[in-house]
Length: 196
Image: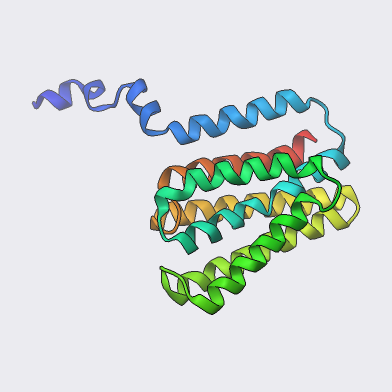
């Protein structure tokens, strides 16, 4: 009898080692839990407005990192995007979603004209993702809040699927970001459907 068979617990990683390896998931759960706690019983229209204005940031991060061609730029790009999302509401000129969609369109035009580090096929996939997710965000903001909530939940959920596909393929963005974003996206979709 081998020692590993007699000590099956020795083969399992220590919980601290598992947490260290899965820190993006733990961070995502903590962020969403804080958001749910802070928002309390949020009005549907407010939730739709907040999550709708933020949804275009998700494909925009992929477009920017795809154009840079360096997955290690993902977290700094996220940081810059979050600053923009939280700063834009303090001005009354343009809605955050409009600014993010406009920036995505500029990046799409840039990639179409100048090319991308990952080639046309990868750029095409990112372009389709940007158009679909930005379209869902704008549609969710334009319709009745109850219908908008469902459109946005679909957008957040399918962006989570998008993240997990990118995590599996290890393409475009960093693996830690893809895991973190995928968990957040799915949990936000659940929040929109059941907690708002």
